[in-house]
View 1 (cartoon, one colour):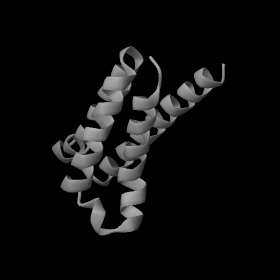
View 2 (cartoon, helix red, strand yellow):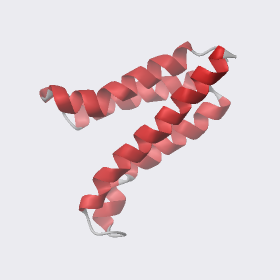
View 3 (cartoon, one colour):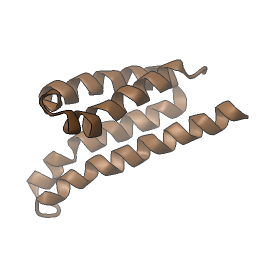
Length: 102
């Protein structure tokens, strides 16, 4: 019972993080090309969240890949606060999803 509650908790956290990342797109005009480009990482996270329902290990691995991509592409390693807000949740979710027993 405890594992089921924790799994659902982290799944909900994954969706909350996805919604948080989607907020960064709103600095562009709504439904413009800039807005859609800013939402590409959100679409990737949404796909990974859906994959989690079928295969948690694959979703965990994909979260770790996205962690490395976000860290290097967005250069979050340069500022600790940005790293903690953007990259660290991906690392934690990836490790938790990999550890989950399918």
